[in-house]
Image 1: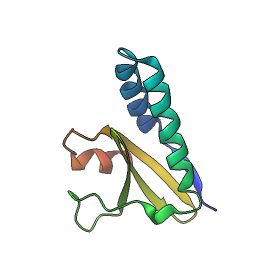
Image 2: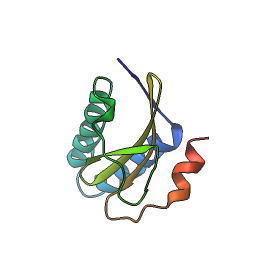
Image 3: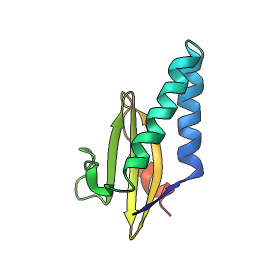
Length: 102
């Protein structure tokens, strides 16, 4: 079983999204955070269930969707690094993933 490792920037991304949602509805923000963590926990047993991001041809990154978020991750041996969480309506900036994976 793989180990999930959340990077600090990815945790901050999720916090920022949740805080924005909480301005309107705290329970929705809490529910989103729970869904994100339960979805990423499933990667322990099924790490390759994510898809290749359509914007990134031949990429080593995968993503899972937990509406309204896209969660980007990378697999290295028995470790899964959660690198970036973004709102799905935003445009992916390729350089952000590369910056966070170093």
